Amino acid sequence: MAHCLRRGNAAAAAAAVGAASPWRRAALASYHHTIQVVPRETAGPRAAARERRNGRVPAVLLTLAGAGPGEGVAHRKLLTADRKQLREMLKQSPYFLSTPVRLQVRAGERSTAVVHSGTVLPIKVHRDETSGNILNLVMVQADEGTMLKVNLPVEFKGEDVCPGLKKGGFLQKIRTSLVYLCPAEHIPPKIEVDLANLDIGDRVSMNDIPVHPTLKLLSKNETMPVCKILASKPVE
Image 1 (tube, helix red, strand yellow):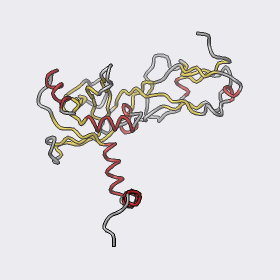
Image 2 (image 1 turned 90 degrees about the horizontal axis):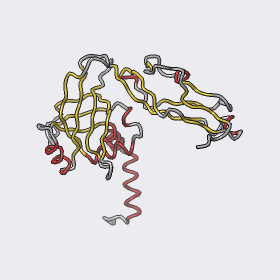
Image 3 (image 1 turned 120 degrees about the vertical axis):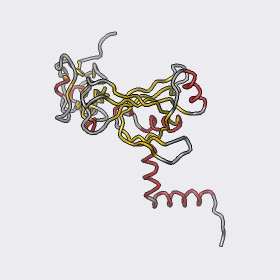
Image 4 (image 1 turned 90 degrees about the vertical axis):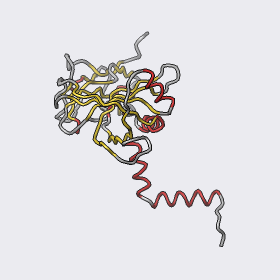
């Protein structure tokens, strides 16, 4: 019996093992839904530059003083994350900044000991304007019951069946995001605007969009339009 496989057979065998091993899929899912970090001792530009040279991203975890959004920040924890993992997570999730994820703080870069774990919401990713490299990550503790102000991306669905667009109309997108006050356990990754029943001249206002009852829209004028169906594209 042969003790080696041809490339095609080896690939097929590997695929079969992966398909038959739930732990492999679970490990992959965990990699994309759990940010692995380690503590860092010092702040400042020199320390941050050193971390980046070592393939890591300086990160900060904010903990609010109370459950409300106006309670202020009680604590800032200095951390570093693996740049490769963050880059992969950003590729996998277009809603990275509106999706709570698990956080594991390990004792050290080569340690398997977990000293802290919990749920966090990434709120800022700073990138280099020229290279696009990730420079810094800011997260906030997102324990159940904590109210967080979240900038949620707006997505439009039903363009293919929209009566107004079928007549040759033009979709004017006025808002690409909306700010809501959300309980950490009910943060939606995005806000969907359904265009399926809109005709020319129709609009969707902020307060027309159905959301979870615990979410509160933060806007001085909730009747402002998010989009309109125009008869034609406006002249620039």
